[in-house]
Image 1 (cartoon, rainbow, N blue to C red):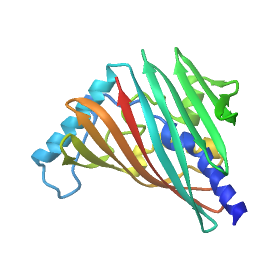
Image 2 (tube, one colour):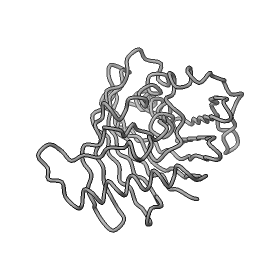
Image 3 (cartoon, one colour):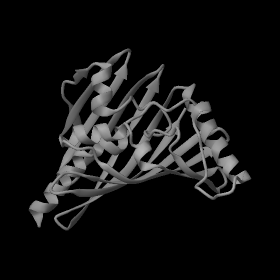
Image 4 (cartoon, one colour):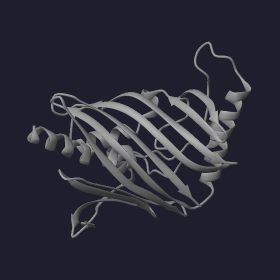
Length: 249
């Protein structure tokens, strides 16, 4: 039992760079298409949800900001459930981005830092020493290598491809909106990092992707993402993650 739990913990640690840091530069707002499910009526609520998404995208696209991320990955391997908590964030300034994610538990500790600054792309991993993570020398990539291995730099509202991927959108509260995405389209670039991080031959299979956007006028306050996918590891491992990213301008 203990051995199995440690294997699951290792997977969760490897996955920290996947659900937090796997990125796609957000598409231009005017190209983002939000559509209702087949048969659904085009309502004022849908229009409001679409407008909120476009406004949040436009707001974040023209400003420097930083974020704080808090969440967890749940996995089951060999019938053993495991949850690994993750924290981190992004700093986006002048078109540059630095992303970090760190996780620590009784079973495993791991960290990753990615940066795309001034045409230089680099990734470093960290180890916990005396209560703090210490990062090693970063490995550098060309732009093409970076995208192939980790997806596009994560500078936008969410890490997923949105253009043509929004299946449904609805208002769920004052300044709060929920979006369901086509998992195949949405994970177009996200899946690159999953395969790289876990060192597997096949891409992950995404079952579902959705997120809740909270806004203050046009300004995004937070995004809470839920996703479920399967990776080709230990005979097939199904993972689900939920995390909230808070924005500060």
